[in-house]
Structures are given as structure tokens and as C-alpha cells.
Image (cartoon, rainbow, N blue to C red; front, side, top):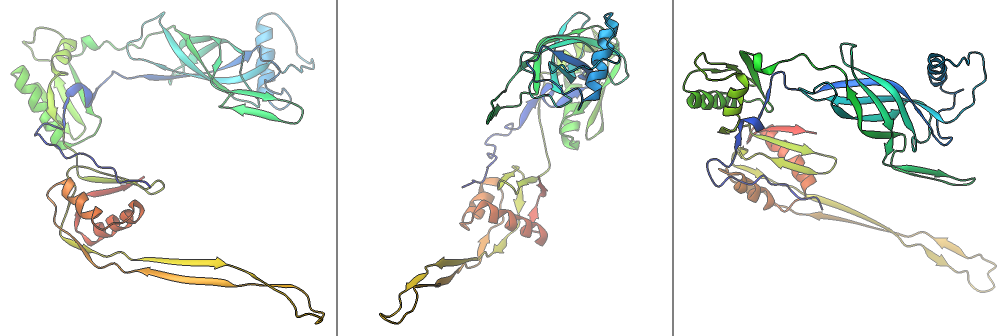
Length: 361
């Protein structure tokens, strides 16, 4: 049975403390998505059907023409080629000539990319410029085998990965050390946390260089008398420990019956009753034999046993709680399942007795 998940109640004041580097992102320090279209060759008859995938046929003809082979107007039936989409993440501050991993996914009706080799594929950024080139042998996690009357497929053989298969050709033009001001973005926006981060930075540096702009942003300015650049400043402050704060929230996954409560969830005194109605239907047909010499026929007579069981549940009082543990103890005292608890929490919220936000996944 799915159990109620508990977020442990902090036993010390700074149980929710975290380093600044673990709760914020730095403006400009981010990955960039790259995408490209290419061909995988060398497949053992598991590639695209050229009649069903005209883009594969056109790409194959264009590639051969660039290599000096003219196949226009010819009937091509090869099954060893597949059109694929190639994706990769260009990490922040990646330098020209560095390697990156690329992912390959079939675009047509290929059955497997096992044993294939990706030909030179330009990888484009959102601005349409080429930032990397990908090529290499494709490694897949699944496999497929097919006979005359049966087939076996394990995993997804139409997707694969090329470790260090991308070569960076262009760098992102962002110099962090040249910045005089930048912004810190909270991964979980909160006004209290934003202000605490700014106060911790200003207390450490000794001058007001950090300003909270909103629940998700802190602007950081390089002090005039600071001995170093913005990178030195970030290095000094990212290890500072602050106490994070979040609004009271209950997250519910109705499909799996999982409930997660934050430590600041509170409930006013409320009485809850929950009744269970169980209906049991049992079919036990009887065989009826005719009397001797009656010329009758054996027949099956249906018989249904129907029972209704109602569990009487009295009103249970959930006292006003001052901690998450007391709230959970009060709810568990009702002796109900997590799925019933979901409905009860929503009803308590509707009554105004629950001081927390409910988020349903």
C-alpha cells in the first residue's frame, strides 16, 4: 500500500540551510541546445524504407552528389541508411576544439540503429549558426531481432548516443570576468530567501553590493574597491550558507496516491468523519437435476449472494497543529488510506482550516 511521505521536521534552526551556489543560477552561465539533421549508414538492413521516407532518399542523393556520385533518376533500394535528428547540449564556457556527447534519434521508419555510423552532421544553435560537428559510431541501449514468425525488441533501438562524438567549432561569446554587474536567479523563487541572500552577501563583503529585485532575482554589483573581478566575487560568496524559506505546500499525485507535505503546513482544529461502504457480490450457480422419468433436462440455476457492509466511523478531531509531525499524527489517527487522505485534505482546504497551498500533479 502506498504510504504517506513525510518531510522530516527540522530539529535545529538551520536544518534548511544551503549554500548560495546550490540555490541560485548565475546569469549567463547556462547550457545551449544544439540540433542537426544527418544520416546514419552501415545498418544491417534495418534502415529507412526509401519509398516511405522520401527525405532519406533526397538526403542520400544530395550527399552522394557532393562526393561526386550522380544517382538522380536511379531506383535506390538500400535499407542500410536512416535519417536521424542529432541533439546536444553546449555547456557554458566550452572552448573551441572540445568534445561533447551527442544523442541520435531516428526520423523515419528504421527498425534499429545498431551498428550504424553517423556521418558528418553540423549542429546548429537557436540563432541558426553552426557551433559543433558530430560524427561517429552510434551506441544504442536496446536491440531488436526478427525471424519469420516472431520478433523481439528490447529497449528503444531507434535512439542512440555517441560519446564525445561532437567537436565544438565555435564558442559562445560571453566573458564572465568582464562583467561589472549580473543577476542571481533563485531556482525556487521566494521573497524571504531572496532578501536573506542579499543580506548575507552584503554582510560578508562589507558594502551594499547585492540588491533583491524580486522573489527570483538578486542583482550583484562589483564593488569599486574589490580586489578582483566578478569571478573572484562569485567564488567568495557562493560558499556562504543561508537559510532557505518556502511557502507551505502540499503536493499530491492522485495517480500513485503519493502525498508530500512541507514543514510549514498548519491546520486549524477540525473534525473529520469518513465512512466506508463495501458491496460484495458472489455468484454461486446451482445445478438442478430433473426427477427420474420426468423427461426433464439438467439445468443451471443462477444464485447471487449480495452483502452490503458499512463501516461506522465517528467524527475524529484533528487538533490544531504546531508542527508537521503533529499534523501527520492527527491525520494518521483516522486510520485511512492515502487515497482517502487526498480527498480529506482537499475538503479541509475547502473549509478554510488548512493553511497551505495544494498542488495536484
